[in-house]
Image (cartoon, rainbow, N blue to C red; front, side):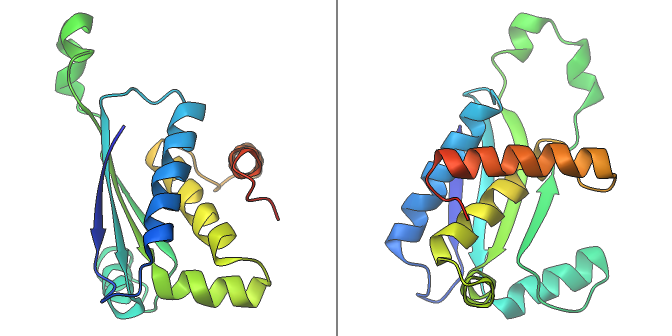
Amino acid sequence: MELQLRDHTEGKLQPNQERLAEKVLAQAAKRLDVPEQAEMSLTFVLNPEIRELNRDYRGIDRATDVISFAIEDDDDLANLPAEIRAELPVELGDLVISIDKVAEQALFLNHSADRELGYLLVHGFLHLNGYDHEEPADEEKMFTLQEEILDGLGLSR
């Protein structure tokens, strides 16, 4: 999977956090059998930027931890022959994570920043791949898968 990583944190994002993001997303993609030609972006921001995005796109005027912008399936592609579709990149969408919230929530929840970052990455990635937690059964399925991926990376609670 191709990952385009952007850093808008004014130097707050650490190199080990970038490496962790790449590792976590690669493992999550493998677990979900995401095609190798899949593409997504990940942008790390500070609280003011994610607050603005949350306000503009979700109508909630406060900073949040992660926002997922999934790219909807293109029905026009469904009409193409399978061998051509197999060659095309799969656009998953964009994740935006507040590095400020990673630190705040890790402290509040009394676990490592790595655990918190891993959780937000997997949670957002699952949303990009069609998972949600609106209904209890969907929540159980999503959260179980989330913990399995994190446990496999040594990022359990």
